[in-house]
Image (cartoon, rainbow, N blue to C red; front, side, top):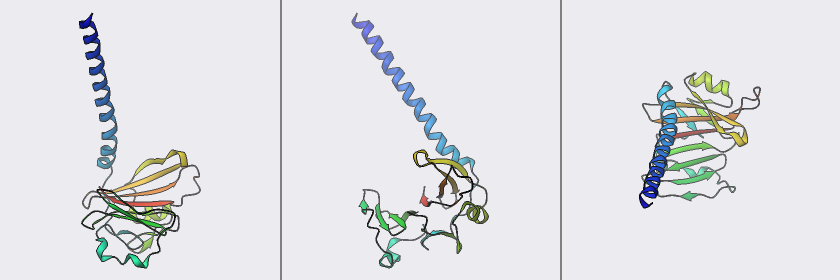
Length: 177
């Protein structure tokens, strides 16, 4: 009887391990496959509020920006997150900027001095080498995602998916990957 329970327990453990491995294999390659399958786009001139990912927070006068009272700044072991009116900046312990994000439609994302307010602006300046992804189904938002493989930058442009006529960019996210 003990041998039967042992064999059943062992089979259950093996099945759980196999299911876990299959789930990981199914999830991880999706993100990797997207990054690999999309042609690289030069995102080095892309900025949010005239700040690029190439910079260091020590070289930016953040006192020129008004703090956002709706969000609390936070520190994690990996990064500091600072919320300003219409944008977020995150940087690592060395001060290297690792993420920039607009927080409203009034946030400014630009490419070489040209503001990107809608998907047509984005496509005209950055091209068509992007991946379409669901961003937040509860809010009916999708994203067009570009990758700069040379500079290891990912740019996500979030827009409402339910209204074809409404192609405004709700948020833009630049981050190192």
